Image (cartoon, rainbow, N blue to C red):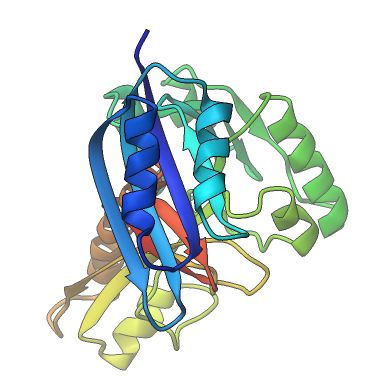
Amino acid sequence: MNRDYRVLIDCRDEKGLVYKISKVFYDFGLNMEKNREYVDAQNGKFFMRSEVRGVFEPDKLSGALRAVLPEGARIRLVEPGKKRIVLMATKENHCLGDILIRHEADELEAEIVGVVSNYDLLRPLVEKFAIPYICVSHEGLSRPEHERRVLEAIESFGPVDYIVLAKYMRILTPEFVACFEERIINIHHSFLPAFIGANPYKQAYDRGVKIIGATAHFVNNNLDEGPIIAQDVLPVTHAMDWEQMRNAGRDVEKVVLAKALKLALEDKIFVYANKTVIFD
């Protein structure tokens, strides 16, 4: 029976890699239905994403590829299917609600297995979609203790492929991030770099900014400096008050987060050197 797989390869660049990889596919009788490759000449890195179909054993294909690739090559064979994700939120509902609606409309290759929040405010919204909701309040808890309970909540849902911070407003510790390396996606009100803390759109309004935007990125141990997945901006004018800016900014945040999540779910992201290569 034919099987579909996404083959993701990144390695040191050298002459003839596309030929060698394609020949392995040919020798296994595979049909290469889609293919993209990229060479980072400055760093001598090669990236390739192929969608193949045929009758084969994944372990044998992986071994054959490794035999023709440079030492240290990373090879991932991913069978398409819905990935299991957990959403985390605090009080704002725009990003959370947007993902819930896209999930309900079957726009995402995902199964939302649960939502975790440090407040109970969003429970009515989530339960309308018949998705489990766990509130883990941070009140009266140290950060390590709160994160321990959050991890327990996430583990109660079973295996998880990605965690999506849908405006979750708590800084994660290195210990938490290490449990989900390159698997936590965050949305940030970027292009407002001078405006940190509470109410960044009010701060931006007071400074008379001319563009606002958003950045989705993987979370690492440097606050809001993880590998960037997707970004967008839109112009604003002096005629807009800070609430209008905030509403426009929220629209951008929703779209950028959804785009980043879709790219991750479809295995179109390679991460290296704190940046990404994206085959969209």
